[in-house]
Image 1 (cartoon, one colour):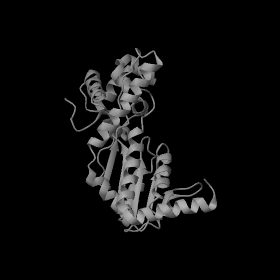
Image 2 (cartoon, helix red, strand yellow; image 1 turned 135 degrees about the horizontal axis):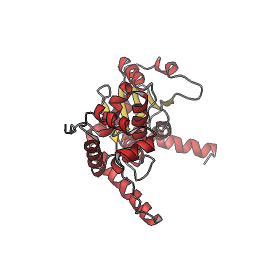
Image 3 (cartoon, rainbow, N blue to C red; image 1 turned 90 degrees about the vertical axis):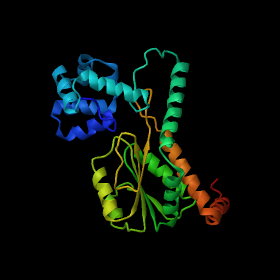
Image 4 (cartoon, rainbow, N blue to C red; image 1 turned 60 degrees about the horizontal axis):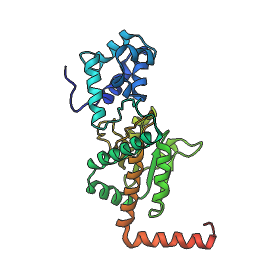
Length: 281
């Protein structure tokens, strides 16, 4: 059976995880963290790395609708070549210069692929929605948490009522009870996502607030979000490359400032004046 072209290797794993047996789940979670391992190793080597049996590897790939291990391996390699987060080991890169060059080239590729799937109209629409909102809520956990805080901090340059949630010791419910249809919610959902992510999105949808969802490329488009920005996070090593996520934050905030026109410039001027009076900077 040939891999469906619209289903990535990682999306197959994520869809299957809830129904997998413990050993298969351990293998699936291992591949979610290090997806390039399947492209790099044969079944016996992968089984050893994931601490499972070779039979478990065979059952696992069949559960993902591949005929055999080699078919799954070919699919993983195809995604690696196309710029997916899947990556191959690079044992030939023994020098620091080669490692740096590879990292820079991968960052450029991530940026190109991310913004080839985003049109200006989407950026403008979200910027206008945030400017028109009664309140902007920004949410992020784990790896997404620093991006949510950074995005909120940048937005304060132009939007007065913006908050990153939850704060220390707080629950989401304490904030979600206040979300209304005239609000805009920006959720950062980079993997590995917390278990409550789907319930969180359901709550935003039920509140009928405008939702923007920023994730890695491994998720299929989420219909609950008016805008779903999928950032490429492929890496030359074991950590995900989030350059495109930071670039998206920058583009969104800059466009929001531009569309705010006089009002935006006036707020920036007030901020600078206040900083001078207080003497903080």
